[in-house]
Length: 154
Image 1 (cartoon, rainbow, N blue to C red):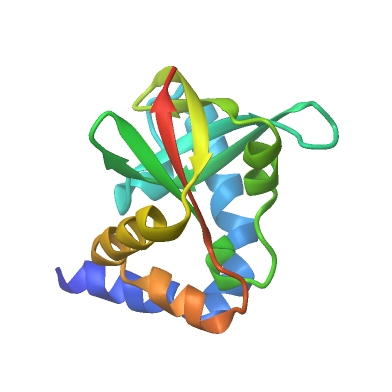
Image 2 (image 1 turned 180 degrees about the vertical axis):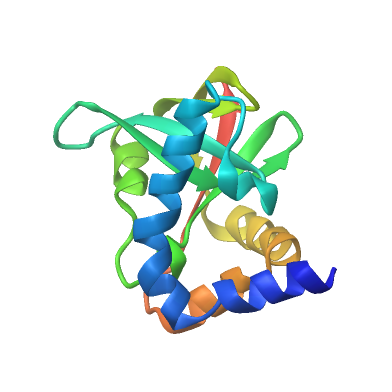
């Protein structure tokens, strides 16, 4: 528990927000590729997926390692962008083209994404803060509302 709290405290800092978006996804992609989809480095602390979405402008496949919160038969994805000002690119992709695929525990799963809003978003946000408290620090630093998507199997 002490190690988890330390990681949460560090991940909520502005310094982490500056470095992590450049380092963590690259490491995740490399380890995921080398392990043939069986290991996601960041998933040692939080569950994670590799999201394959279609680029909103390019139409090309885009692979993004993301933390997730498994929930029932689906997953919640949080567009926190480590508390940086802009929405992450993958959220625009899902808004434009909600059909996607995730690599979950070494298996490719076709999914459909839906942006949560209103009371449904508020309920999910409460559960997400219990799951990973640093999301609160990310939201406090920015003016935009962090996007939350529910992924369901298709």
